[in-house]
Length: 491
Image (tube, rainbow, N blue to C red; front, side, top):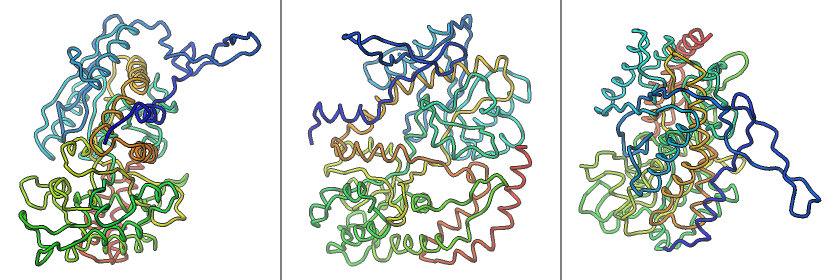
């Protein structure tokens, strides 16, 4: 497929935020200036950039802890020089602009990722040890809080809602995602375009347009637009593309021909319960109420269980690249109609021979108002260590960097993300904005409240069981106890 200037223009129109109106004073929105039109008969609103307020941080080295790399996500915070790569150069230019405006030096402290669990614990421990020692080594850190929620409940992190200089209500912060992370009026980990991992880890669907053509299936774009992309509709597509294709069974065979409905990541069935309108709990003025006994969940699990019927070839789960059931390999070789994956996977499919399209996860039914997209609980998000030499300086620098990221980095990121083979079409660009605006995270996983429950729920779905009532009965008391411990710690 070929992109056109019109396509790129549509992308930038959909995804580039307008410059925000900011005021004199402490980085607050201001009244815009008045500009006289050419006719001199009207006054119009002038857009201005970020108000740095004449601050001067006297060359201070602002240190941010981050992984060097993890899971092929785009987490880079700085570069030593420009390279000609558009996104890298946008990050470089952003930093130099904010450094010059505030007279400080941005320093990224990188940690080598040592693997699942070990790597996450190591970077979390660096922050807790620094706080305990009264060490000001890190002004901010990108951490996977879910691996050690005690870093929040034991008081090692700053409540970002209390950090002076942050304007978290402004559009350049990732407001939809951050609202889902807030608990009892507190926000200890947050997202902005300063680091793009939370965007990369949005759970999405890609579909093989060539297989759809072969099966005379309409692409689902219009169903999405009409609010009719539902679990039942997806099941129709899954069963339509599933085929033995000459094989004796759907048992995985690296040299076989069977075509599966879905090539799946192991955590995605739970993400689809969220997309279908289920949330583990509701946050209210009185506390937290669990929804795990909701009849809607039973119905969702029943529908997903049919969709993940391995014997019928509807879905196959595999995340080991060395195994024949590897989900990316199956999809890229044309042996799956859908792939459930994170947005970053679109970059890894640039050499795929078939053409693929992008759509959000389905709704439960047409009465559900919005499409919902889960961001993986293991994403590294912004945190600020509790010990700070100058908390306002930290807040202002992070706020300014987030603003400039929203203006100059995020549009390039989306351009790079969608500008790969199969996503160079107006439909996928349109779908991408729907996905972006509907993102949220499951805070009960980040705080360690629901991890056992989710593991067991995933097992129900992938084995075809619908016994959500027994699962709720076995987990409710321990989950409520965990909730109370978290709430007590955050008072």
